[in-house]
Length: 394
Image 1 (cartoon, rainbow, N blue to C red):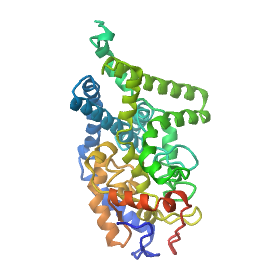
Image 2 (tube, one colour):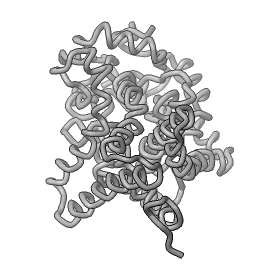
Image 3 (cartoon, rainbow, N blue to C red):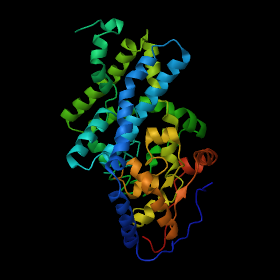
């Protein structure tokens, strides 16, 4: 198990300065990227997002079934697709990792962040100045009542509206790219302190609080609208209402729910399906690792190797959240513009390099981190974190 304060050397031994080290690693990763095909660089992740989008109708239709297993399958499809599009999609889009075109990067950022994020929490904005709790840097009429004809003609557009966003792309870039990635584990800037809720005890936070994420997300979004211009605020607020109503409409008219209460309960169920690992992963990978003061933060390569942790490969979470959030988080923080698949491909190169230079490469299991946080909750999530000073590296 990785402890809260591992016995890392105060001055990791290496040859050359921090900038030279980072330049050497960048050259190795650049060679891997250049030797990779478009499919490896972008295609794999685009295909996963496309499959998730195309699977939404099947999920809604499965909810029509009276068979418990088929109904559960529908909930699973909608829940996993929901997190894949909102967490993985928005995360890749805000980093420009879906395409090498600047124009298309902007388009995908708007699409995923401002059209596909409301359905879920997304992975944006660990802005410790209060932007948003998440992560960091940088696109023939039929009978509607019967579910025939007109319902399915309008289904594709309504499906898109049912997963529209609650936040602007600019907020995502500022909170996640500029703050979290730019100042990883720097107190007051990118230290993930927005995830701390000291007034909750450990059991409420770890087991019950995740269920509130689907409810809190649009409320936080509305609160954020006070700080944007009126036109943008009205647009975003309209999209929030459109997204929630579209999801509700689909459950009533396509999935066949008979009462508003049951439809709302199903909305909450699908949107909170992976809320627990979503919350846990966001605290496991930074909190409990070295924290730095603003005036004595180390160089980038030391900041990322010390302050970021990888979890092992977890198939469902790798699919829904992406490798860059789960098993390749160190690689993602070092090279944030790489896609999930490319982070996985360069992982052996980064791991070997850091080990050869005797720099930390933090890895731990999900269960080990879970028990660590449960047993040391007061120290990690309530008390102010200690500041780590690395002599000679600041």
